[in-house]
Image 1 (cartoon, rainbow over the protein chains, first blue to last red):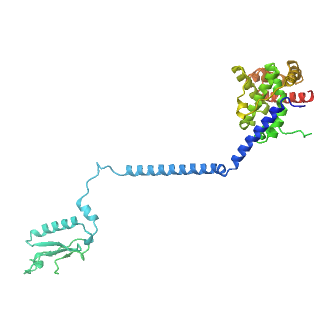
Image 2 (image 1 turned 120 degrees about the vertical axis):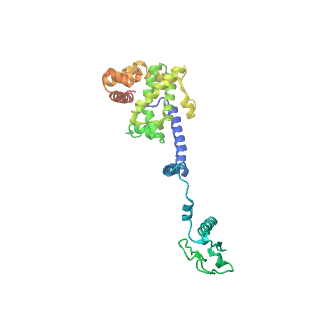
Length: 163
Length: 184
């Protein structure tokens, strides 16, 4: 039996062919084939980035909570700073040398012995009795004063010895 | 003569996205039923032809949205037909949105075509075709296609499930198509 509207069928078939041709060309384009892969990779990268940011943020929060607040933190003792200082005299800061000078001067003031503390160009600390350093030599061993010992490394801090 | 295509309506609609021959098979199966539906509801041959053209154009535009899991191909087609009819009634003129979208040229409908439609699908002819159906199919097709009622409403009235009604409508339309082919 013949169709009632054959022109309609023909025109609709032509429209389908045109649409299929258009979509077929689009589908064969490499860019269109790659588009889903690129989108997937981008989404995975973004997810990874978010995870890293979250982990880092949570880690810094943990560290902050573990650190005591400044309000309850006791001020550090000057001796603690001294202990943390390296024992090599050539690496001693000027503050350390000053502290040593003061301590030695106090220790020997009562004995009447004059002591001088020098810092060599290489910052090696030389602690010498004034009698040894000066022109007059001590008459007795009492006048030379007690030999001092300081620090862990005696080779770098020489006490009471002549040049 | 070409061998009869054994594919189901759903298979044809899926293939028609990129295969105009598959669409042609579907069109030839349902052209007369759609014309009969509009001849019955609109009452005039030229109006039936105009509405049918818009229905098939809308079907082509929507081919990619067809989901065979959501219902039969014939049910989908007559759903489009009812929507086109309702919108045309609302606007007071036959809708041509889908045809404009596809860029279809105006379809020429001759007086001979109009006479042929009216003589083939007048009320008497439709009633004659419906009477040839089994009762369950006739009631379902009449309620769904001619009275344009919803599936759930028909299912409540017939005291059966909605899927049974869909099945009856689908099989009834298939039988009608066969009758028209055998008794032109």
